[in-house]
Image 1 (cartoon, rainbow, N blue to C red):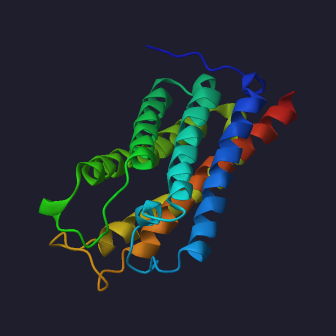
Image 2: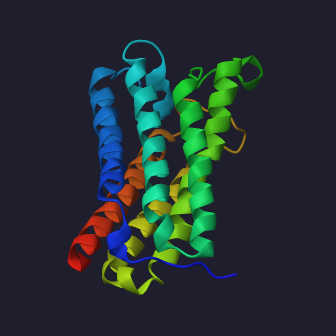
Amino acid sequence: MTTTVKPVNSISESVIRATLASAILFLALLTALLVLKPEIDPAWRFISEYAIGRHGWMMSLAFLALAVSCVATVTALWSQVQLGGRIGAGFLLIGALGLTLAGIFTTDPITTPLDAQSTSSQLHGLGAILGDGVGIGATIITLSLIRNKSWRPGRWWMIAILAVVWIVYAWLIMSMPADGNFGPGVAIGWPSRLLMVSYCLWFIVTAWQALRLRRQTA
């Protein structure tokens, strides 16, 4: 089965700008929360805890904004990828679902025992698992795009940011506690934050390349 790939100038500029705006909004909100909620120690506490209590709406909005980036990217790039890339788009939509769940349902504090977690926290945790679809989708889409002749001028930027995503993801995995118990002695905070930042940078770099290549071929 073959899939027809359309010219780069068929990409909707308004949709790709929505990708950019949503990713930048996530970064802006996360940066603001680092200042507004200093009690959430970034060394060992997850960003999800910013949604607890005051200013919590900002973290919820940030997750939903990143979900919008996922959907907008799929919409904008659907015509640029073949079947493999469209499978990647499916993973990106799974990631969008996960981010939406994370935005709607608030987690419990990281020190809450697993058997004492609320339903909201459990649904948030499900969202976090589904959110891994972003990294998988980004990888498959990037590999598909760099095989598209029209996208080759931007391939090194895209490969570089994808490498950053996976380096940070590996750091996150290595930081996870073997027994599943988190606390001040488990330095999970920064790698989890930087993974989300790397996702945003992938959206931004990919959208920027789409805009640049679209204008060159207009």
